Length: 386
Image 1 (cartoon, helix red, strand yellow):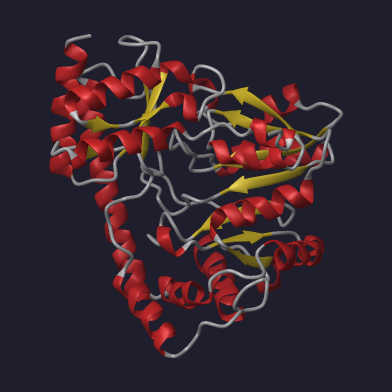
Image 2 (spheres, helix red, strand yellow; image 1 turned 135 degrees about the horizontal axis):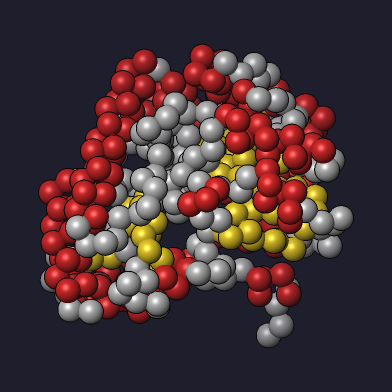
């Protein structure tokens, strides 16, 4: 069978293979420590759960407008005003089925066959896959410590081509956890504007910041397309709810796309998400952020003794991006061997990096400190045998 040629550009997510292997080992009685999937062990916050249950009891199960529940769009606008000093009209916010829905809308609106897109390498693979499915050619730009593991203005200038239409950033990023400060973000925005391009900013891990204050591109202008999600900071992974903030002129075509692609996001999930912005919920989320910071620090301390700690501690998200080249040049084999010998599941770097992923792995600090300390001991035993 011959499929659409664009589908061939979508690589498999190899972490799912590791997850299946880990689950099979658990089913056989092994004690597996899961550090592979980007989903912390926290349940959705109680205020969100209560609001979702109340929405169902009240019969809030009918369609909302394609752009989302007006009250939720207003709540998100107030969130930007209170926490980021950004004046965002609710009309510019579209509620989507997860951040994936927002990425789908942005990619379908902004690029077509023959266009080129710039983004950092490593990056979350779905970012480049959505652009490729829209017909664009993705130019992945290798980044490292010298640019803070981010695409900066000088790299945008060096790699922009006549057919380049947009650049995409992620802050905090997946898999490295690194952020862009206001000066660096503003410089990239200016570089893109000078070339009459568009900027898409993935802020899915916004709020999960440990060493600097959260930042939004919306604080620096109103021409960027910003993708966000209720999954990470707000702890609502399974509710499948995200949003897209777009320039005013883009709202009408994006709404038409939403009407035709997914009609509307989940109504009960939208009502539940209203509770995510309450002071009670905010207190819970901030407590969890501090727990994640402690987990990060425990992992950094333990891995540094093995020569595996990253050269720059991540400022956000809940991942460590580790160079394993002193032990292996095959991250897939490294992860599979670690799982089979020590029952620790982590993610091969080839999921995220087009170049050099063979010598990196991603560890998600998504379980408690005791389990992380156990994982460090197991990893120590494993690398001592290599």
